[in-house]
Image (cartoon, rainbow, N blue to C red):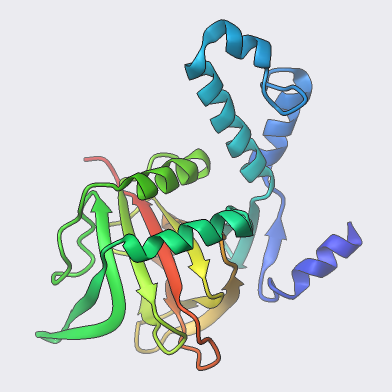
Length: 258
């Protein structure tokens, strides 16, 4: 236990790591026999009896259980927290997804500031429900098979998700400034692919934000930001002259139902 805690001090140097209550609950269910279990975590006999739909549900439950056990709850500043799964996708899986993204059509992101449209070096594309974060943004497209598979896997740990926004950052010189996500999302699920970049949270206005927490997000990792944290704190992707490789960020959100 001591060696595991020591390993966390580096990447989580500004964080307080708490136990995952949901992981412990799932483990109690597994031990009591109320969670599907077997040599590979699936009751094969029951799958033969109930058919492919049952098998599919078992697979999803197995994936969610495995991911939930690896979820870290991090208190980034007093009273506000995020959840982080470092290996949400294995390095091999993340590499495959990253290699598929050149086929995803992305346009330079245009940001409207002080009445003027500014073309940034970021490239982006929206999918699913419209996320009105930027008046100049294009309307969303229908989910592709690749993004639908990513959505389903993230929903196993985050619940239903409505919209998807893909952003490509060509290198470390391209980032995004301090902001809160618009639309009062109930949860923000951020999947990182490619170059590892630092991600920061801060308090204050966009121009005078004081950083309170920073962490390097791994290739294939998932960061979950709850509504309370998004509303109270701003976040950003700082620029870095050291990073030369591209980063792809797939952000999914769930919005309040009217």
